[in-house]
Image (cartoon, rainbow, N blue to C red; front, side):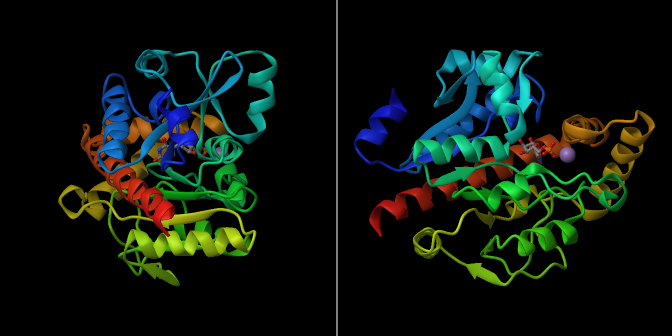
Length: 294
Ligand code: PSU
Ligand code: MN
């Protein structure tokens, strides 16, 4: 209802994904984060629209009970682009990844989307070919996505190369380098830096007028929540080793690595994750508001 009213009045809306709730964090922290993220968007003047699939139908905006169901359910399918027709045909419940959320948000007419981290090119992709469908989606779906970069479980230089090849602009928000989710900086220089929401809104308008598609806005984790590079790299190495030992591949790999990281860091990664998602929700709301003013 809230989202429908916002559309009718042309008010700013921010899309949110549901895989981060169902597969990205454990219960009950996931529900807490989902609610706080929605509240953060509201406090900054926009309407949150958490996107998911219920009984085969696309939902843009979830009720409290629906959020709770996605936070608790064990049988919700993680849906990327290729999974959408299956879940619709079978009238199943599905949680949407960044790629699938972009598709449904664009269909609904939403321009801005906040998440934690996007999928990317996995380490060892030269052997496994594991490249998230999120990346290709940016080249075909028009949406501005605010993320804290991409997790260092991935190969970040290759992820940026891929985005460059597909013509996807990566904007550093108040930064000259690509952030790595748990840490604010890397050696990876970006070509575009913008320092406030209004400049980003102007960029989005120019991009969309040109008929270009996705934009990645990289918003570094707040300084006080940043983890140390060494400790997180050690935890990642351990998580990757476990994944290899258990022969985890395909769509199961990202959720497996997130869960292992949380175990290895004794919940530290989870705390950082929450802080950066909230920070992204705030910036996305500011951008959505600025878009209605430009
Ligand atoms: N990275 C995170 N947290 C997440 C995800 C990625 O730090 O929750 C989720 C997002 O929904 C993202 C998906 O779109 O994992 C990517 O999965 P895959 O690598 O299988 O495309
Ligand atoms: Mn993959």
